[in-house]
Amino acid sequence: MLEYFRNLFSTEFMPHGMCYLWDPAVLWVNAASDILISVSYYAIPFLLFYFVRKRRDITFNAIFVAFGMFILACGTTHLMGAVTIWHPIYRLDGVIKAITAIASAATLVMLVPMMPALIALPSPSQLEKVNRSLEREVEERRSAEDEVRRINEDLEERVARRTAEHQALEAQLIQSQKMEAIGRLAGGVAHDFNNLLTVILGYTEMLREHLEEDAVALEFGDEIHLAAHRASDLTNQLLAFSRRQMSIPRVVSLNDVVNQIEKMLRRIIGEDIRLETLLTDSIQPVKVDPTHIQQVIMNLAVNARDAMPTGGTLIIETANVELSAEYAGRHIGVEAGPYTLLAVSDTGTGMDDATKARLFEPFFTTKEQGKGTGLGLSIVYGIIKQSGGEILVYSEPGHGTAFKIYLPVATAIRETLAPEMEERDVIPAAETVLLVEDEPQVRSLTRTMLTSRGYRVLEAASVSDALKIVAEQDRPIDLLLTDIVMPGMNGMDLAREAAAARPALRVLFMSGYTEGGVIDRGVLDSETPFIQKPFTLSALDRKIREVLSPV
Image (cartoon, rainbow, N blue to C red):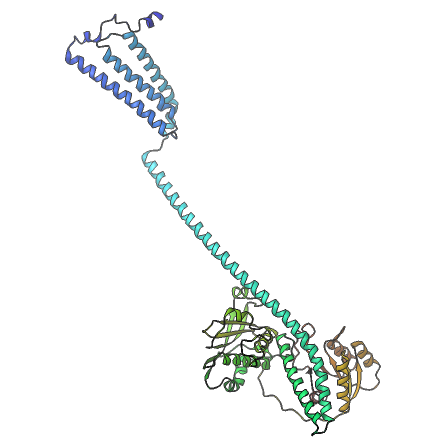
């Protein structure tokens, strides 16, 4: 074997050209063919190596390399075929053929187990089908991404809208809490002032009765009496705002309420303003104090008139509406369900957001000094809230204002509004009255008023003292005149226990205001006798006669 490799390049053999008899045609055809084949065989492996290097994702890299080596060896074999025509180095030619044989055998060994995998390779049609499937998947994914993007944008929009709604509700809540706090303060102040005004008005009226008609002191007394009445009107307006004024609700039609005051409204707004009433037929009834709702309409009409100094249109509408849960969710204190709408709108100057934010605050006004107290809209707010309703304002500068009032629909049968009865003459009497009042000055004044009219007065400073008198007094007691709000037990509790002990006992309630938690948020039914502080001697006497001598 060593001898073989030592003589690897020996030329001791006869060249192939001898076999071709050195025929040029035969010789050059074979030589050229071998050279061309070898060049092609050399090119093919390089292309395969380049392909494998660029496509590292190809699964069958090893077979490509082995096949390339095999082709390269074959090319060298053909090259040696051309060389041995002239140079008989057959030992080298044999080595190259052996290498070619090994390469081809290795390729075969590698190729056989790969055949199943190669056979399993997808056909062009299958690849086309897969490609179409991939295209559909890409399109679906793109559509899904677009849908996700759309949903994301929608969510962002919803979040922004919810955030805005939350901020609006938060602002409404803050405003509601502020109005509630102002209302409690106003109600407490008005209650205390009414007790003081009761004393001032009462003693002033009694003083006037003891003065001569031409006395200067009588004139002074009249001025005091007038000023006290004005102060009383002011405290009553504060009570209306704080929802602590006396309310006697009835089931009525808003159409009837509007029709009853339409003539008065036309006189109030003047000839330059056109009044339009758009009243819905078959309007749902509401349970309200009709007098208070008339006051609401009047106050809004006056406010609209002042906003239209050069004339315009005032529109009063009624309608049956159904508030959705979505709408109710955007407004604090509003519940979904059926409502009766009362809308008062004008074509006036309108207002900006800053004015709307303070519109219902007591004593807030945009009018010149001396042209308004700033309580008109505060009263409207208090009455609507006390009636269980909601009032919303829509306005822009230069585009008028609309007040929309939503009142819950009543379930009871509607009552017909009737003109108020004329006052009856006061008839003197001498019945026994049990007076219960925790304020000493008010109790002293009321006792003096009653005794001046001939009543026999039993007085008590507390509910417990009054119940003791009811139990121990031998003589009949004709009337229980009691304050409502007192420490401990209130006047309503006293009336129930006293009536149980004395069934024939008549009751008349009095108060500077009616506490919400004591009498169903300041509401009495129409059968409950009540007199509002401050009251005059004649008003008290007349009310007592109504209770003791009903028609």
